[in-house]
Figure 1 (cartoon, rainbow, N blue to C red):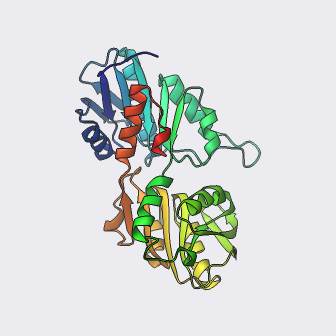
Figure 2: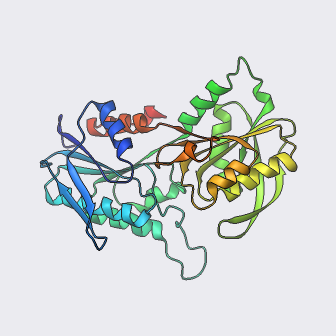
Figure 3: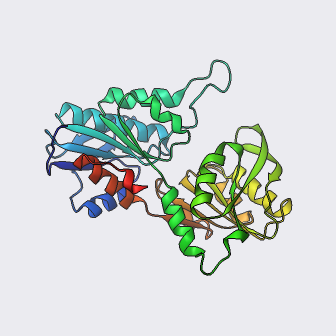
Length: 321
């Protein structure tokens, strides 16, 4: 393994510069100097204003909306570092866009997640650091090392502080998976907070719309915590919350998800739903609680900072979990 010593550089694209600044403060290093702009016609322009020759470079950039612009910024920044003879380039992508296109849902569909993985590799990245991929198998789409952080510990810590076991009877709490596809991650979370598990069974009629069919598990007169990896238009989550109250007879509904994509009518839906509070990690920058007082964000930049420290030092990141 190449030793990089103290020669570590962190640069940020335009997706979430505050997140990158928090990482730098946690590591006690300055933010790398770079200009990431666009020309009048929309082309991305990147200028590195300091040397990266032989350095261990980390590029912090979520590929959130506008997804294609943010992705192109990451690719051009990576290429700039490669051509400037960076020793190693790690793409730090807190939220990995296109992750939902991980398979062919019907004939002649692309597998865009694999295409994006190929593009990041071809641009010159040596490794990738991300959190809670929509489908864990996307890790195998990359031909370079990928470190997959989990948002689970942050939520476990939050809810054990919010509902401590010495004050609340956790047998009266239920972790709920909003669909069958999220059962595995919800089960892991439920085990860690010592709560039972329920599932909302739904039938999706078309993209971004769903019809809730049934609640599997006992939620009557209990406090429910909906757990998912991302919330986009919030239709599935809010319908699940409604079903828990109207069909299951739940006493109260809370929710949490790693990535708050929050597109279209999501804020309005959350505000009008039975959900009392929804917690996201700050992998995607949001107006959030300025549009709905139900929304709260937890800062996971320190988690990424520790992961970067381990990667730079060549040590395992397993202790983060």
